[in-house]
Structures are given as C-alpha cells and as structure tokens.
Image (cartoon, rainbow, N blue to C red; front, side, top):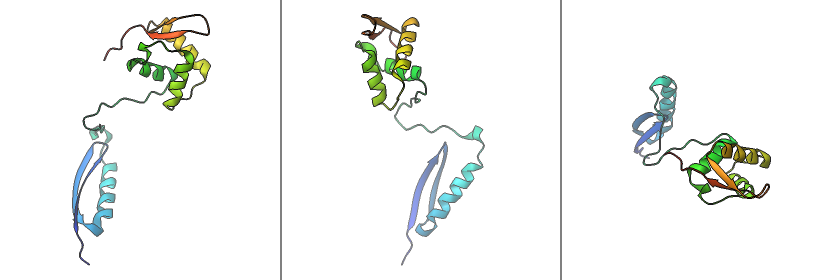
Length: 132
C-alpha cells in the first residue's frame, strides 16, 4: 500500500503553519505544531478573526445583553419587560426577571432607553441610536 502525500494548513490562535507530509505522519506533524505553539510567547500571538466577518464579544452581564439588543436596534420598536426577558432567554441568557427589570430601569435613567405606559405595563424604546 502506497502512502499518499498530504498538505494541510493549520491556524491556531494567530500562529499559522503549512504542513506537507506522508499520510501516516500527519498525526505526529500536527502534534509537533501544537507543541511548538505552546512555546510561542503570548505577546507574539495574534487573535484569530474569521475572515470577512465582524467579531463581536459575547456579553457577560445582564446589562451587556440588553445593550447588545439596543445596538442591534431591537428597541426601535417598543418592547415590554416580558418580551425583553423572552428574547434574552432565546439567545441563551437566563437572567432573573427582576434583574432584567432593574437593568431596563437603569438604562432609562442613563438616557439610553425611554419608557411609556403605567407601572407594570411599560414599553421600552431606543432613546438614541448606538454609535457604531
């Protein structure tokens, strides 16, 4: 049985390599690349960004998630607390409903959102557009 030549490109956290080897040597070559990567100082590594796509950080707080919705223009239409809480849950962020209510009120005080309606039935709107 004849071994075939294999040529692959590896990119890992800003370190890039092209490997050409026999098919049966591939595992060893990749392991050597990963071992060599561990020896590259962090200061020389570049963050890898998908080509042609904007990379956004994943929000880590209730405020961050709501601000992310605001940046997307989600509040350009009036939204209730229930709608906001549900949208956050759909996106995988499961905050307590009272925490979401407090954060919406805080963003109203900050001048990012405004609200209309009566207590318990507020609709939240985008007060100003996000700066891109």
